Image 1 (tube, rainbow, N blue to C red):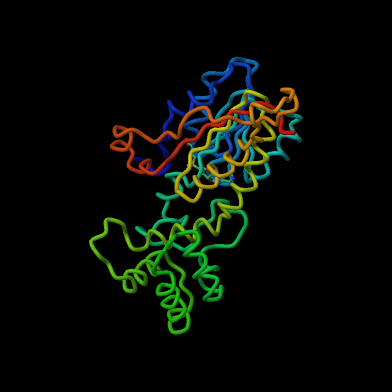
Image 2: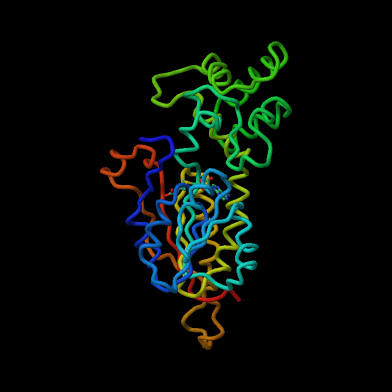
Length: 312
Ligand SMILES: C[S@@+](CC[C@H](N)C(=O)[O-])C[C@H]1O[C@@H](n2cnc3c(N)ncnc32)[C@H](O)[C@@H]1O
């Protein structure tokens, strides 16, 4: 696969789930390399519109290559989607897509510092224009804070051991700057049993999630996304790891809670608090053929929620 390409995950299922209206207005919160966006555009007529967002400047540059009046792309975090919609005078949307996590070009481009397989500065920022790098976190944070990051965002059971080794390295050798420096340190610290996973996987995941505020972003964006949908509008979320999926699942559950009213109580239909959203489909996962062709899709989960009415 080329460094600048990304295979869109569950493309058919995602487009089906969005149930696209040809004259609808759609928002792709995570353009990446535009695999999903391009497919959405194919289904829109001349009145349809697609707004795309991404934090990553390389993704924005790719998006700018699409010359289509129905399409525009903006550089921002998706938690800021309402600002863009307001600026564009868009009141409500017919569908929103969030394909969470990092894109293949971000992992494959060594200099971005996301991968423990090639040597580069430990950057890990999706948005290259601002924010703290993974190296700054590793070299300036206190022991307890680093342990919390590795535990909360990587579910790393050797968090304490790894962080102790990081602190010792910082004191004796100086700052940890490179991906392979960190990977080597972890390999020498963690007992390796016959696991298929590289011992650095969880630490790198945790740092990436922390540096990019991925959990905060999702928690802040979900209510804004729900609010921005028209009735019958759909939100499709593809999550990359279980932490994200749990947030989507729990938030949806909360929205679906209705007052339980016994059939015996005489009450008007208008007085019953109905759930403003419904789950359209059960969670979808990639089929075996897709996983074979694109192993990176193996842990992705897709959820679809439809707005029934405005929340009271
Ligand atoms: C998995 S990729 C999306 C791939 C895309 N669907 C495609 O088919 O090419 C995720 C993209 O979302 C972007 N991203 C992740 N979190 C974001 C956020 N909070 N705000 C804006 N963009 C974000 C990343 O920079 C990355 O380009």
